[in-house]
Image (cartoon, rainbow, N blue to C red; front, side, top):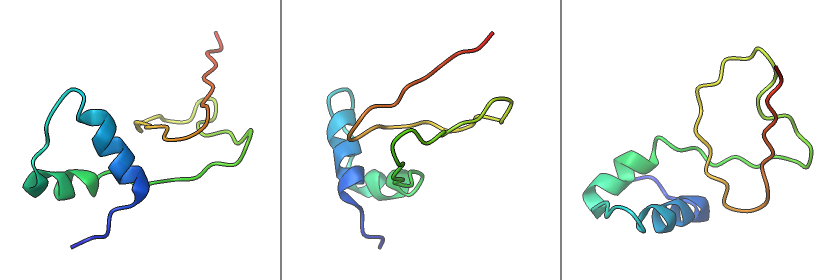
Length: 68
């Protein structure tokens, strides 16, 4: 059994507003998500880089810019 982080618990709490995920389904579901810490002003996704992630921000701010 994996040890889930406080970020996983924050995600579960946020999702519980819309859906109840039973304990037996939560652990396999939580394994999909990897907590990451970014430093201030770090570029998370660069221009022309494939983007196949979903982010859950548990603390701080994430800015998104669209260049056309």
